[in-house]
Image 1 (cartoon, rainbow, N blue to C red):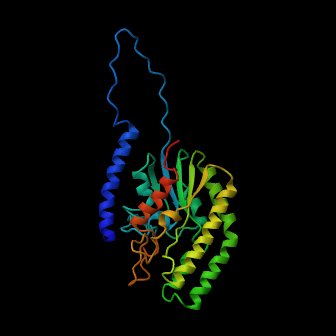
Image 2: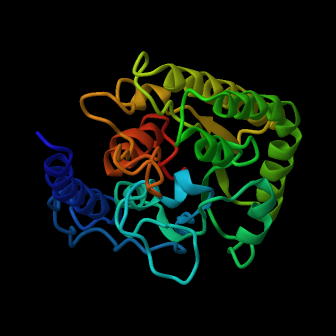
Image 3: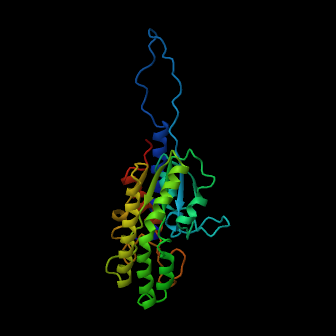
Length: 290
């Protein structure tokens, strides 16, 4: 079955699940009345209305959250490459009670860009998801250097330099998570990992980049742990993406071998955003309103 057929079969099914979930959450689907009101009993006077839990959801960060691997993109006058239909924030919005107010993630965003993304975000936001740190570590430079010649010394040197950048990344991440937490005091902040992009053994370069991704995720997980607060959580999506890298039978990443510079390349496609990232969020229970 082709990737396109998988996506076309999945989207209607996901929408149906979302409709049913929403109906259950709002009480539109309810059990039949168990009994009518007894005439011999006084009517129950309703108490004060209970305030519904906040469900505002905002996505921040870089291209893995903007949905760069799943075109077409939103035409909003920015170079952010936000997927119009198939980013993981869109899928998360469909299968959870959280309602996405905006996806402010942008292709090429680093930790230095997150403060600007927070401008205008409501302090009543209840959930934030983000991927950030890859650009700080030089992932875009690595792809630019390695796409034309994966076995060149330039490519190898760029990867080694990227790994060296991880030594100064942790303080940037901690500062970024702290800023988001302080700016949005009611929000649960979910930091997602970067999945391995290549099937193990597919190519020497792929194995090298997978190793660099593992090292990056170790720094991200450690930075989240350093926050020492349950409000900031790390969600490791590696299990959901396992066996679905570039070169696998059913890849969760966009890759056009005829165009190594295609914008979508090496980013989660619609399958990766749904069965990968969104499923990781569901498995970790972060899409439940508490």
